[in-house]
Amino acid sequence: MYTLINGSQKNHLSNSRYFLDYISNYLDDYTTYDLMYSKFEDIINSVIKSNIIILAFPLYVDSPNSLTLKLLDYIYDNKIDLSNKKLYVIINCGFREGTHNITALNIIKNWANKVNINYSGSILIGAGEIVGKKSYSYITSIAISKLKKFSICIKDNKTSKDIITTMDLLTNKLYCMFANSSWTKRAKKNNLKKNDLLIQ
Image (cartoon, rainbow, N blue to C red; front, top):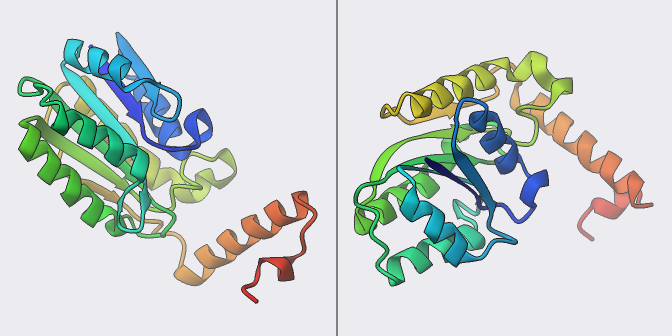
């Protein structure tokens, strides 16, 4: 049995949930929880019954976001026995390079060591906002292929090396152009102009 945990505040609309849903296509007998609206007691009950836990969250200032940290503290403070469990981790960030997620991953590895769970691998996704979006499939295919490889590792109950994805087909300049374009479109939907987004 698998327990999939989405640590994003955006719930089922988040990139973290997208990656969990993608992986779930390779699994059977799994339950997915969105931390924003799930009781920790329910998640822990599922974790105790599971062999494998898959934790996904967005990067916030080189760290897991506060919602994810709150769950990790809850498990540690309540001395939940995870000694016979395996942990896989998905971290996504808005930067082009997945390497920005390494510090957050080290935090998770340290926590895993303290609660005695078997850390079994990760995928660190750069440009999380566009990976998986059909309109960008021509530039995210490499990242998706790595996500597929990671999914198969989990299905086969194997330890994975830490996988890092970077938008190699986009230069920093092009990536910034894409990012700025999306913010401008979002501003327009909220009756704002491009200049309204600038720091005054």
